[in-house]
Image (cartoon, rainbow, N blue to C red; front, side):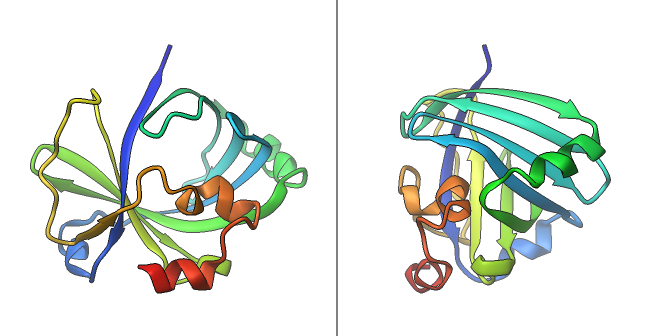
Length: 161
């Protein structure tokens, strides 16, 4: 069983761009969204698509199952999305033995920038880069699911950043 263990932070400034890769565009939508589980579809700028099932409502750890799927099928699934399709560009930024993922949001959440770091264990304590700000792990308004379902407002999230 796959586990997702991650911490999430607001990003401060542009210093992270110095170390970032070229980024990849992502469109993602939720097909099923409940308090303790979700099924999402992502379509990547390189033509690939992936479906992800997440189960659990713990702040730091959830069960996660990911599968590559046909892009045409993913496009069709987007028609059945609950709420809005999220648009973002994801950059990978290495720092002190970890690869951080920095998401720069477009659309309704234009201007919001969030960094996530995946951990191997809940006991991992990564060195925080100087470009991360306040930790928002567990703050539901910063979850992609809340943003897609309209439960969090893009303008208010940017003000909190």
